[in-house]
Length: 456
Image: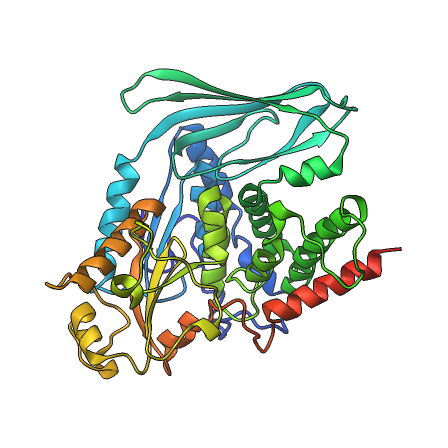
């Protein structure tokens, strides 16, 4: 389904909830989170009926105005679909992404008319499922469509004691129809050892998976709670995890030292990045936040961390420095200290790709990469061309490799200091101090103090 304006006629017609100038969510609005909830229950009823008939709905939104994604997204989320959001839509750069998104949507590996169930061995049971699906009975998840890009989070809970050293088994059964009309069942089984030692648990922690779960839990919480409360919950979750490690696992050390488990040493950094993300920061358009919530609901584990802590690389080093055989150069920390005026930097989060051009960049380099000679010629919306020189070829290789890794035709935007595009780029520098947020160093100090307060 394609959408360009607010659907204001017919069944489930929506009204402009931002009509009174509420384009942004104000920090002072106590009820602002209610604008992130669906406006009409009839959309949910329509979505459930569509799912019963095994109809999956994907919504492609090409707009420059408010369209109430909080309400529209109910249908794709319930039918196993997805919201594709192109804002602000540009006739110059967006058609290529729209075309590639449509093509991948119909050609990617996928199944239809699916039913999924997760079973556990004695002592553990499924508490809840989270993702884009319809659920009519407690034990099964109905999926009109399931594809290679979506994930479903399953929350488990203990209901009995587990013996140390014994095995605990999990099994996921997915019954589906292939694109060739064959009915198949895919069974995935995992058996893991039980332990009574928290140190073993921390040693085996998977940060990527754990953070993806945190992200989905936060997305579920945002529409029903004020943002300050959600940010506090996120911070406390990080503090409680690290406090448990310090209390039960860490060896004797100085009280002034912050102890981090090796497997989770980047948890504070990603927690801070989440707090400063589109979903949780104070400023931002309602539709942007609603899309973020919808996007996170089915996000894959591989894309969870890049969404809040994007990858940034230096383009000017593509020729001069060794990349150890990798097409993509080494990542740079997301701090303005690492962004020089004579540099060109690429930042990508799996959905968008920003190329920042410093104010003192050599005009010859700009000409090689973008076919321009000065910053005044930069347009935020552009189509990357390949010119007949090694630097341009390497930049195109980097962008194409990122698109291949992310399974997404990332939108490209050129950014420069001093205008809105530059502000957008620097908003991703999550390690910097902001008017409403701590720097990474300050956040570590805050976490450490809270842990010390909890210690006896």
